Image (cartoon, one colour):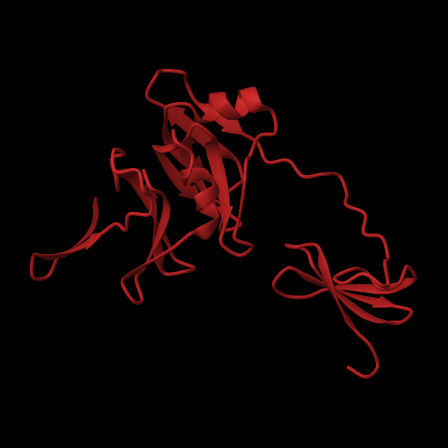
Length: 212
């Protein structure tokens, strides 16, 4: 399998072989039928039979998605087809037998969109396309005429952060006097013993006191 770059001005082309990360020589390596350009990272994401791949357009190198190893080492791992990028910049891609997975390049974690095992299997089985729309809804189709699945985003009503002064990355004090939203998903929180900065993407706090 290769990622081919076509130069329209001089009708030339450059081929970039997909790296092989699996030891099973009987498995067809590098097969892929879908990819997406990521403008925020200037890269191309590829859903291959060897797992999710990222190709950097800056240095023309493939970047390894290390967390994929827990899936690609499975004897029966393979890819289906679909791949897309949601509003949070996360990569949705279809796999076999684990269904649709979500990779977050910021936290480098992989999650499943559906907690129910049966629905997780049904939504990802024989997947042909994944489309993330501008309202946060994800649409999927397949080649076995199951119709179209609509995956609706769901957020918990609230998350409670308890103050644990002696614990790293925790809220330092329960007495909160002010909250102010900052950039990059951060919340600046004024407490009785100093400023707490919450990263809403990770749920972790940084504490700044008078000496800081």
